[in-house]
Length: 141
Image 1 (spheres, rainbow, N blue to C red):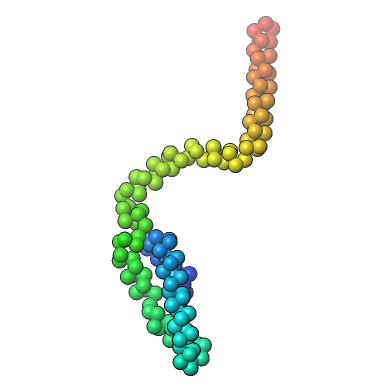
Image 2 (cartoon, one colour; image 1 turned 45 degrees about the vertical axis):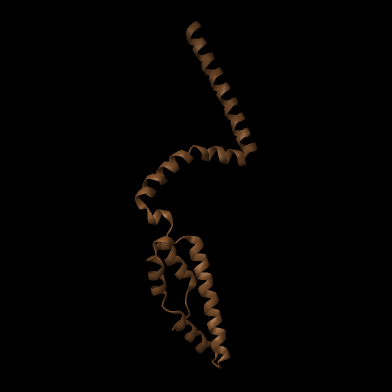
């Protein structure tokens, strides 16, 4: 049996809606358990390759792990448990947070915002004064 791909297992669990903190913990525990099984098999006199094969077979099929974890509703993140609520909440959150994005970006780049604001103010005053001169020349010309 090939060595388990824990990165792929983590991605499959995340795709099924399992909470990221639970995925990190479960994959970490599975990796530690796999390493312990390899060490135990090597202590029994097996070479490294056979020890890894034995540990992988004892650990079980990744499909069964994914199926068992995704069957438990409590392990899922809330958007996967309540998809209808998430469909309403996510757009509303974006609608409320979208206007705050420039403010947050502006706070972290205050000097650039001041430079741009000053440039726009000067350009606006210059344009307004040119338009005023044109209007006055039309009016009195």
